[in-house]
Amino acid sequence: MNAVTTPAAARELTTYVLRLADTSLVLAQRLSAWIGHGPAIEEDLGCANISLDLLGQARLLYAYAGELEGTGRTEDDFAYLREECDFLNATMAELPNGDFGQTIVRQCLLDLWRLELFEKLTQSTDTRLAQIAAKAVKEIRYHSRYSSGWLVRLGDGTDESHQRVATALVTLWPYVAEWFAADALEQALAERGVVPSVAAVQAGFEARLAPILREATLTRPSNVDYRWFGKRAQHSEHLSHLLAELQSLHRAHPGAQW
Amino acid sequence: MTPPQDWALYEVFVRAKRGLDHKHVGSLHAADAAMALEHARDLYTRRQEGVSLWVVKSADIVASAAEDAAAFFDPAEDKIYRHPTFYDIPKDVETL
Image 1: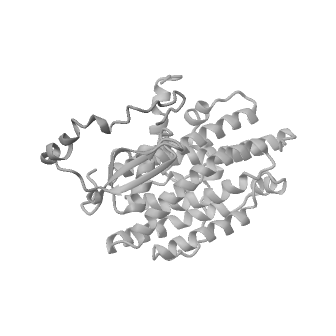
Image 2 (image 1 turned 180 degrees about the horizontal axis):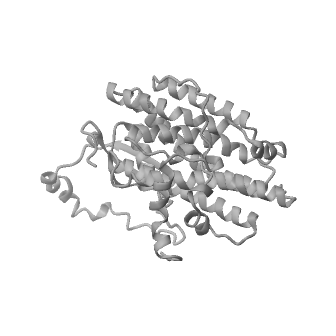
Image 3 (image 1 turned 30 degrees about the vertical axis):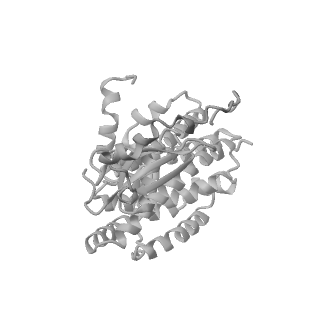
């Protein structure tokens, strides 16, 4: 079954799919920066694998967005030829890597949110989105195993490692709020069963996070009122630098092939 | 890039498909067995090499010494009657 019946519905779904795709791409780009710099070569590979999975998810989603949009834009057009003000990724994905502990905290929070979201998206009334989610969810399940495993090790590790991830958690926590601040677009799609309700995803996320934080001897920070809105293209100062690097080759050599 | 000093070396064994044996494919560093298994997945099964993984601490493997090779293995050299050459193996049996 296809949930897209009107041009307006297609536009809504395109925007939503681009939010998912941009979050995957931007996070993939961030993680790939660990290659050659990880604490051990085994972790280089771990981050690289996750990065490649995310890139694969972004490609499937961009291809679908292009079809929905009907303008013939390709994966490369979406990734390389849009400006910062066009990107709709969740703000947390674009935040700097920091130390390995901060990367792990960012990854664990995003993994648990995306695991809950994509598991529910497999039930979407939009068949194509459900199929993409079904492929991605197997990957994200492994990612969350990797990142939550590390979070427990570092949180319940030495004083130094505990302090670092505890600080990172406080720094990153405010960016979680964006995911659960539903806007009109998400509400409209949820009413039609295309995407899960934000409240259900939040409940699932909190339920997954609580035991991990407990084992990692970390405290869930309290919520803040301020909201970032990367998903509405209101970004932190970090995204433009990330995109400059990501897009430089394609802009210097348009249409370059590998 | 050098792994932390308290990480141990593990040997990795991959089973390519059901019915075959686990084969040694290499080694890696990890803090404990659980991490070793995940590293093995990340390092040695990226191209669909396997359906099952074993990891064993390298220190737990007892190996024969090179200087014992003559005493260990040479005595078998002239005992050809130990080879099962008197049986016909059916052609269709592949993994025997």
